[in-house]
Image 1 (cartoon, rainbow, N blue to C red):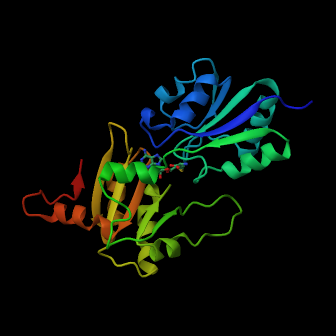
Image 2: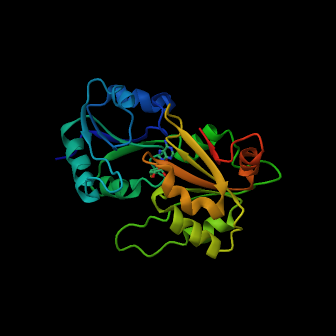
Length: 254
Ligand code: SAH
């Protein structure tokens, strides 16, 4: 039987529920069923007034639904509902396994559409008040992650991060020490200004700034929310501000 439904892969934005696009919010309002990530804000889900809501989220170390099973559920849903939404944090096409879902939908002949969202890197830059492409300091930005899927070849993330003027590292806050060591081994200077932004765009957001050499100690910051590590000369002023005699020596900005 030909599916009559359409699947929308929608970016929910980085955290704050009002950072979804108008198009994304409109699709949610019309949705019959929503499959969402664990990180999506409850107020964003509430936009989908009529829809059945199914959590298929992945959160490191916690229960996650196998990708193949999600693909199958999307296909089944397109046979049973008219408007199916796959709602992902940030932008659906960045570190979101969207390609597997797109391939499965295409393979099954199901109509789909992608609605972009604001990715975490841009939410975190806004939170920090720092331009990732500050003129005179940065002409390139790399979005990287040390995380690779099962059976996947190791990635050259550290090389890419080292080559860019500004690097934003996703899914890495739990491995800060390994990340710092890998970057330093790639020749990144130990005094490179480094920022960690946790829960960007949410009321409980926290920002920390330190030289790369101190990133290894980030385990003590008690980071439990989603966080990106960002580094490059564009964070120099933020780092300098923490080193002023008037500021208590802690390299932390709340
Ligand atoms: N598709 C998403 C990324 C999914 S990977 C996007 O475009 O943003 C999940 C990672 O995103 C987390 O491990 C964290 O590194 C980052 N992240 C998500 N929400 C965040 C937030 N509010 N603040 C900081 N980092 C966040």
